[in-house]
Image (cartoon, rainbow, N blue to C red):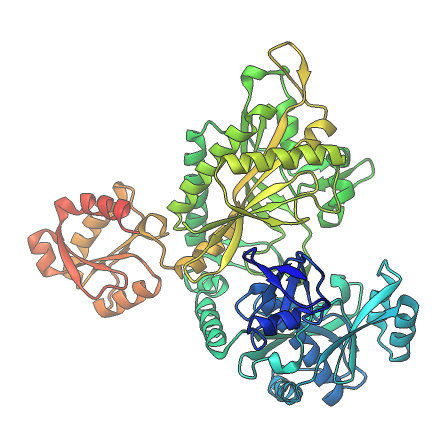
Length: 635
């Protein structure tokens, strides 16, 4: 029979051959971990059919690594049940980015001190070269089996499967519910390329009303070198942690009196407003206007928009004797109200580009909160464009232009795009979704965007493009979004008059550039490790005197810079200059101007740049030009 390989080459192989047989024929028997057959990832034991399209997955393929990591989750669960708690109740054990985890309910409280011992038992299992063997059971037989072994979470999972049979995998007598695929055997797991990393709490099915489980995390890679690189990256990320730097640089404060909210301190408030003001400056050039909409809105509005049905669990509800209100989790319904005010719009008025830095509240679970990256109250850099269908492409091009300009200014040039199509939980008919997805795809293609499909991750009212930024240490951050929405305009019955005098429903494009301003500030803190570019630094310059004799001259320089609108700090404290330099450098101030007797006599300044041991001298009458040039040309 003939099969087609990844590069579309034909390959002849015996009838009834498996993917493993194909790997042997191609000399990949020691490298192939699994296979993709006609787009579905499967075990190497899978029997091939004539004209199948087959890709063998190795350690170099992301899908191959996912199989490796998932198999390690099973090995870890076996090690725990065999050696640490035979009565442990097992929940789920998926592969995740860079590793895997398993959720368990155990009478034993596991800690990081237990992880090396579990690892060693895992290595003992791996050395046995145990095969992963797939089997199937009827749904009822599987329920009976897991009930008999006391695995209540597996019973619940099987009961939720909409099929007559379920898939299971056995490795060394450890039988687990699993769709797979898995490695051919444990021997394919590199002994020196995985590590158990942490233990955390996790509610069963993510619901705080359910059991609290122990989640044991592990990292896994193709080889020891890749794992070492990963942990080096984690060390770097830890040093850049925005929660740590936020305290050290006096940017913000988080407090139990307001969980999921942020107290912006002086420096952080400057940084926050610099981000907001720059975005405002750019969008005004593209003919956006700003609005401000209320925080509390009547339940009826959210029912019309669909949020009450699709998003209510994430909303803060306020009840009184007469009505039910909700604190807005999104700005879009308020912008529709703004669009409806006044006379009916003409086609000549379109597009209407409406923007708001709107404060939103979402009832996030306490376990999901993370510094200023995940909050319950945040400001969204939101905009909605009301346009005619034929304007979708031109508006998408304009939005992409804005995004690229703003991302580049903040130091992000490596941008990936994801196309997120209809989710399971949505409003609107399939016909409307077909039109929205087709329109957005055409616009993305017209904009020359290369994108990957993010299946089922669209908003409940429309498909979206997600813009993912890569930071300086290689981490990805999803920031911008662009959503094409035919549903909300229809639900709110908004119109414009076209050139033929007909009433038409506009398209609504939802657009965010950075998303949550708070989260984006957190990303900037970590991207720059607190060493912000000159234009973005809360304090740009410190003027520090060496002795009391030069304090008056330092004060004069300070006023000159402040009047020129540079964010300047004066340090004329009675401390040694080495101490002053060390202190201000630790606060990551980009520039320190040191003045002493020599500088005072010469009417000059000694310039010290952060991270640079060399100094330079600039005359006082040239300092403003020097700083402007520095601001414009130094990243």
